[in-house]
Image: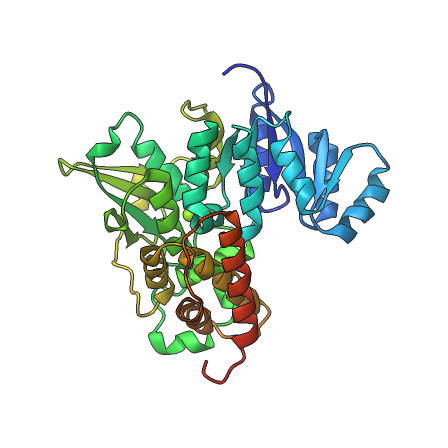
Length: 388
Ligand code: MG
């Protein structure tokens, strides 16, 4: 597969980042973990520096950055703040950017890497949700490559290998349904943070785990799929599949369906993103179909999980509506994690933000940034209103 590629991992101390380092460590001739970054987990970053020997590291949080600077004492080149992370993303030395930042913060580094024509392995789905139109135009202009790490989109990419995109009749994104799939509607008001953080199949960061519990994660993924595979929303469906063995499916115009299956482990889609379109042998656990015995499927219940409907609505509105929805969701999830609001207030706050904030066309990055900050302020100022 040619020369050793320098990998920059934004968010190397998070769940995707740690899995990415494990994958990279399997193929030292092919991949070098050249730059690693964290928000503020400098203890883990320090351990990663000792083990993986990156040439450069970045720390987003300023006080954590100055603490690490003292500890490293000049032994590794350091970059600080949001600007430092962007510098690492666009650096000459970076061949592949793994963007596993959480939320809107992932947008600018993605843009920086695309502008340099790099390959971006994207785990930050919010990038495409808020600015899909801008990102797809930039990819074409700069001949960059965007490969999804999200397991559903990796599945679709794998199903589409060798296929003519014009032959797709629909995509079916699978969803585990999260921990509250079978919970009675009346009990949703009293869902605790602790219960929402228990995901049945996937071990992930807090934000995405809550998004999975509300099904907003699937809503974000529908929008992500729309931009990645250039398909209208009518051709993108969601099916609940609690075992998380089928990671998504593509139906073609002749009625044939292709699915990608695997034991739920993010190392598989991460490795595929790094080796795409090749495959390399890996020790991932294999499916034992006889032990598995059955796979089940349900339609999603948008009464219990309004976030999924809100995501489709926002995408149909278009323009800055998905950015407003995403920002409102980020703040609502933060408030829920801090136990300031209840679980059912998350969709209510998003719906209110979408109703109250005017939607504009996405003319530039600035229009997205403005919609994002307006929605954040709106949710922060209205979350304790009695109307909720
Ligand atoms: Mg996913």
